[in-house]
Image 1 (spheres, rainbow, N blue to C red):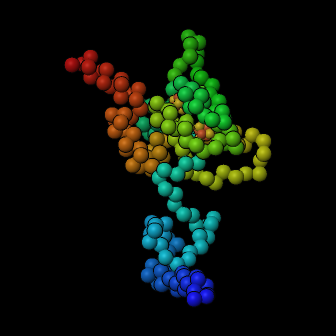
Image 2: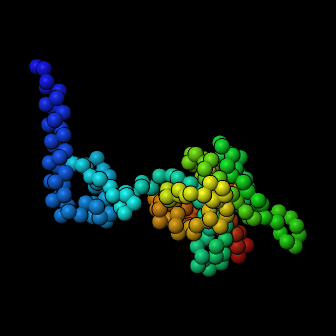
Length: 210
Ligand code: SF4
Ligand code: SF4
């Protein structure tokens, strides 16, 4: 019969329209509240139409979401190494980065002049970064991770989008908060929540003590 498709399409549209109000009532007109309805709104069971009033309201991103990388540093209240870089300045991330937007300045010991396993500075040109996540995948120290912060637009077209170490560094607990299950799996693989070097030193101490 001619016109069936049109009626079916209109029926779907009408369903969406009605379901919008049904869902609003179901959620007590709190569909916009992140803690109340966000998980459901982002799931397959979501019905009806919903407009996100960005930037007042933001949809939560999934744990595996990736935008610009950040550098993991020890928590600022860490008892032994507050704010210490997890990065050892090995350079692997810079080598694997497809558009070559990472520059690392390796630190040197002021007394001996020899290189030390810490970055003096670390730069990422976030206009060039293509958010592939390879740097994070390849880092052997879990020291570079993909951030969830996507609000980085600015009017500055000069150096504002070349992030330095200070701007890239974030506490380890931040990584735990944005990616709890991934962070837990990584800690399991490392053998503990601490940096690999700390875990190694502790194992060595335990061995020499026994
Ligand atoms: S791969 Fe990891 S440890 Fe090596 S330079 Fe990059 S962030 Fe630092
Ligand atoms: S996410 Fe990809 S493009 Fe961006 S810095 Fe890492 S490796 Fe380079």
